[in-house]
Image (cartoon, rainbow, N blue to C red; front, side, top):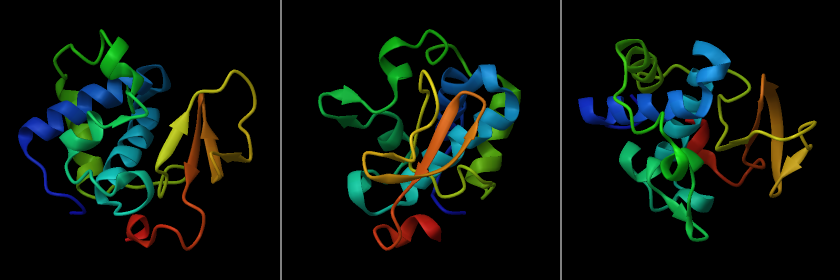
Length: 144
């Protein structure tokens, strides 16, 4: 287990995974889950002050929530379904896969994925989302 979690964390994470990637199916939701867990485990860059799933979900950066769904998410504010909770728990129990295996960021561009995003390296795309991991040597904690 990479981060401690409660049943409430599982449900919260499941809601975010659905809100961010329901259109990309179970695989897409698992990739978003990778990013959430990676941020909670990371002790570097923008994530030195987030240690829990709740901290990650409700992190504010530059005056906005890191996850858009917190501000605009009808899906986020609906209760998590059992299938989504099972996916979240898989992530929390250490499920990781490329391109989000070590990713700390993702976004949904209008076109192609840029090779870097805010200076971080592109690791791959899954359907609508581009995934980015820290530049080598800047965040060892995410690779544990």
